Image 1 (cartoon, rainbow, N blue to C red):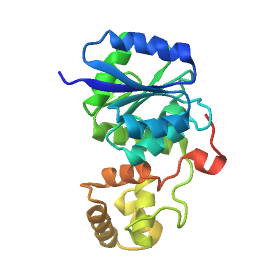
Image 2: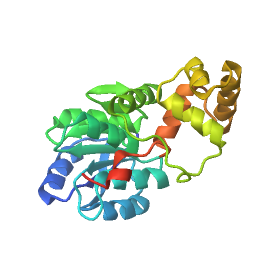
Image 3: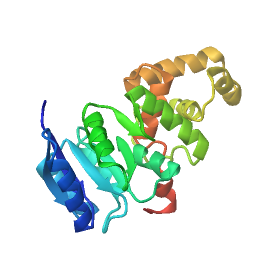
Length: 233
């Protein structure tokens, strides 16, 4: 079994030590780095190149969600497991939006944490105790976006290969509208909507409308609530 390289990010030394003691007992896991704040985590991620990072949310200098977002943008191959005292579904949603592969409260059973590390290292997601595939986490994201609401797209903020009309249609896809509903909403034909969707799928390199909507969520075209309300953790 290949070794899994772990980096621990938490501002409490005793908590980091506790995690380290749990992980060193596993033959396939090695702790290769630690950080005590978000900015240090971003810097060390580049230097250490861990497979999995265990990330607290409430960190000095930069919170864990922002650190996760920056790390995933620069190093998409690094998987992040969020560990936090706040087990709230909306924060789970924001964590996955930021790029996390899993989310656990800090009182998670150590055996479950080890299982999660192995799952995310193999490309899966762990949310609410369930192991999800890439497609399943995409559907989960869309459902939570429609549940929690929020803004969809900031004008001229994010670079996109799509035309203004394609972005408008993608916004409505993310909001959950069918092609027929989009056509009615925009006052265009059903076939025109289909043509635009075919074009935007090709430009984004995705296979279907669900993947396109998830692409928009994961690439910041649907901004995190903290983008407009100010960072919080």
